[in-house]
Length: 298
Ligand SMILES: Nc1nc(=O)c2c([nH]1)NC[C@@H]1CN(c3ccc(C(=O)N[C@@H](CCC(=O)O)C(=O)O)cc3)CN21
Ligand SMILES: CC(C)C(=O)C(=O)O
Ligand SMILES: [Mg+2]
Image 1 (cartoon, rainbow, N blue to C red):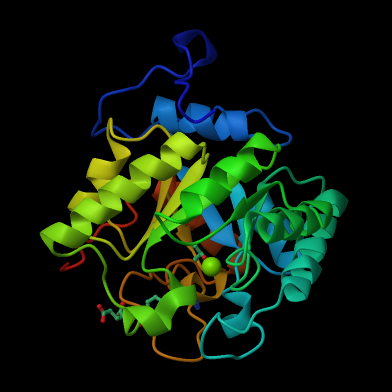
Image 2 (image 1 turned 180 degrees about the vertical axis):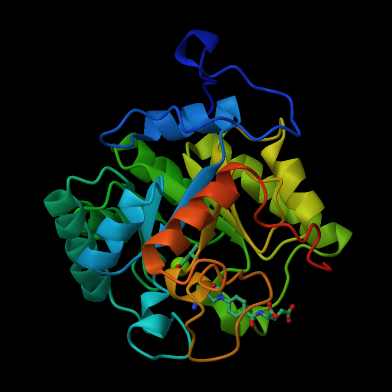
């Protein structure tokens, strides 16, 4: 699906980069679909995403205009107080997905729900991956996200063929923090950059609708977002050349247990109120003013 460019008749004509901020979102009210995400990627409207883990915050983020809500396994860190995402269970992901889906249903919200497959729920086999993904879809997810390149291509294609939209995740993949040796920038040298580009193309061809690029050099993320792939690249600490952005909700509200990552902007400081902070984030992503720190020094 992601290989098919959206025809101009559906508003999918690619636009050259522009200094001018795009107008208000053309997304119709109601449920955001994978088709609309593909159209936004092709048409140049930036995709604004926040994480949420419960009904109330999900409904408030939706009302502020986020296109997707990610039920991230970061909940292990921000909700459960763990120091990594490695210990998060599939049951926890189901529970928080249900909370978010219920909140959106009750508020009449239409943001697309993307839930992380947690560590250990897709590494064993394609069988295990589809069973886990089905559990998340039945809990209310509308797309599942999994981390890694190379070896995941096969799993992504398998899920997509069976009707489960997939979001990839390359660069800093927190589930493999032990192997990576810490939460650090990825794809810096030529070999690592080439591997990331190859992984991105493979995920795109396997049918991924979206792809998170976490803590990679801005130039590399922008290259992957060019003609190389058709899927919607979503950056976090990856500059502003991606098709969209995501932040952990708590971070952009200025709330954290540990050290705040450099790529975070605290939207509470300029707004003083949660609803306004979410709205300011959506506006800043849509008009391209967040992130504003170019290469982030990496
Ligand atoms: N609250 C929260 N926000 C996140 O963005 C997040 C989570 N939790 N949990 C899952 C992963 C882990 N992530 C992280 C965790 C730490 C850094 C960090 O410490 N970055 C430093 C180091 C940079 C470097 O050494 O190159 C930074 O200053 O940005 C970044 C992303 C992103 N995800
Ligand atoms: C930050 C997003 C991309 C994520 O994976 C998470 O919240 O777990
Ligand atoms: Mg995650």
